[in-house]
Structures are given as structure tokens and as C-alpha cells.
Length: 138
Image (tube, rainbow, N blue to C red; front, side, top):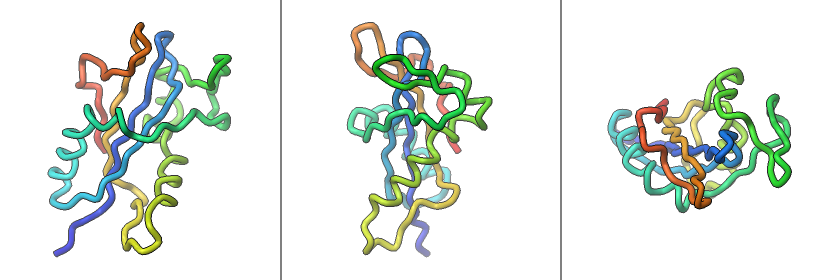
């Protein structure tokens, strides 16, 4: 039985003023039970953000703020938008376009995802939060 599907690690990066200014995504072809797939995503979430593709905050978001050098969303306001996952709807559509036309796989309508918040520290380095209990798995 083929249980392969595309699953996605998603990250949002929060600046030192607590604004989300950058989104990141990386997709994987995974196999196994949903629990095994989610465990795989979680195991990669603290590593692969460093090589994941960057996506800028888009101006169509309801709560977008112009921060001068970039558009951003106040961290926490995404809960008024439907949750963290709503930040990434456009990105999942973009990811589907990156898949080879020869592949039988596409991003599912409701993919398995792991969302991990990241922070920009005072040295301008992107790092995971110290308390990773705030990671969301869907």
C-alpha cells in the first residue's frame, strides 16, 4: 500500500519588535503513518529552516504593517486571521507549482504540516525559540 504524500515544514520569523516579517517553507515526500510523518517533520523543523525557501509577507494580509524595509504582521494577530496556518495558504499554492509535472504527487488540500516559530535575535541571526512547546502540528 502506497502511503506517500507531500508534507510541509513551515516557519515564521519574528523580529526583535515582535513582528512576523518572513515566512519559510520546505516540502517533503513522506511515507508511513500520520504520526510517523509528523515525527519526521518535527525532527527536521529545527534544522531545515536554515535552507528553506524564504517568502515575504504579502500586502493582502488584513493586519499588514509597513515596517520601512519590509512588510510585517504583529505576532499573535494571526490568531484573528484563522491561526498560523492561514499565513501560509499562498505559499502552499506556490509549492505546488514547484513540483515536477512528471510527479504524481501534489500538495494535498489539507497537508500534514509542522509550523515552527523562529526569532531574529539581537545579532540578526534567525534561531528557534528556546521553548519549542509552541510548535504547532496539523
